[in-house]
Image (cartoon, rainbow, N blue to C red; front, side):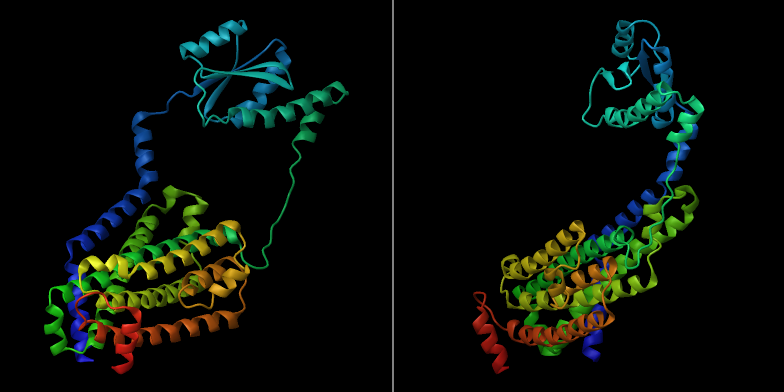
Amino acid sequence: MKQFGTILKFELRGYLKNKVFVGTTVFLVIAIAIAMFIPNITAMFKSEEGVKDKTVMLVYAQDGELASLVRQYFEPAFPDYEVKLAEGSLEDVKEQIISGSAECAFAMDSASSYTYYVNNLTMYDANTALAETLLKEVCRVTAMLQYGLTPEQAEKVMSVEIESNVTALGKDQGQNFLYTYIMIMALYMVILLYGQMVATNVASEKSSRAMEVLVTSAKPSSMMFGKVLASCLAGLIQLVAVFGSALVFYNINKSAWGDNRIIESIFNIPVNLFVYMLVYFVLGFLIYAFLYGAIGSTASKLEDINTSVMPITFLFIIAFLVVMMSMTSGNTDNTLMKACSFIPFTSPMAMFTRICMSTVPWHEIALSIAILIGSTVGIGFLSAKIYSVGVLLYGTTPKLGAIIKAVWKA
């Protein structure tokens, strides 16, 4: 235990003194701070620049009543434009658009027919789509007036609002999608980054022959667990620094964000989901870090690492793709996801996704966590066995059969 503690402290100190680790963490914290202060920064620039004039949108029609009615509907629907009634002929309208005094114009032949004029039509111009929705209402109002309704009666009919309430008896996927996505992406990046780092550190010590000195003063199993747990703690420290700073900066700028439901939902994650996130994150990281460490010990040269860890990386990427496709499809309870919820290499992402985005019986969650804990412990001790054998194997990278045989004899 003393050896393990010494190695853990040494490896963790190495991470915390690493310039790349510290620089990346500081960069992410600064980026989060800037992102959280965006509303205040934007408001400051707006106050300095003053209120800019809105872009002009023209409405042209020979029928003055139709033009006025269309403008009445367009004005609140296009808040970024100053909607004006066009004066003069259609050629005058075109000239204003070409000269830049107006950006666009709707020339109304009738309530159901128009021509949209714009100088440069961008691919993001959605004015016609919104206009067609509004013109359908104009057509209905015009028809009502023709059939004898007064303008007040027509407006009352068109302004009827439908009241509705949505009650989710299970989970609200839309609300929990962000929690799930953030956790899956964080787990994906941390496992690939720190798992590869564990394997590289082990292989570099072995290739420099430093491993031969280390194994004489410490047990290989203590070295293995010390390295893996140090990388896990370093990853958690970095995540706490990043997400903790995000929470602090959000609370400082909470009033500036107003009622932004997306940002608010990210920082109001339910406690039970946060606990599940922590459990699956730690166990998921450990199970892959043990595998990366064990395989790193079998590589004789640093150049062999990428080839050696490729099967594990592919396994993790496949699990990631299965989860992401299920999330985007909205069906997180399909047969494949249910199976992946109990496979230790995929359950950290699959079961957490199902917990967030569907209703999962408690006994399935308990079974999944039990299998994951047992598998993590088992793979940890197996990886320690492989590590103790692999650190002494030099030359060409040993095949799987040779490793199993050596572990069996050990």
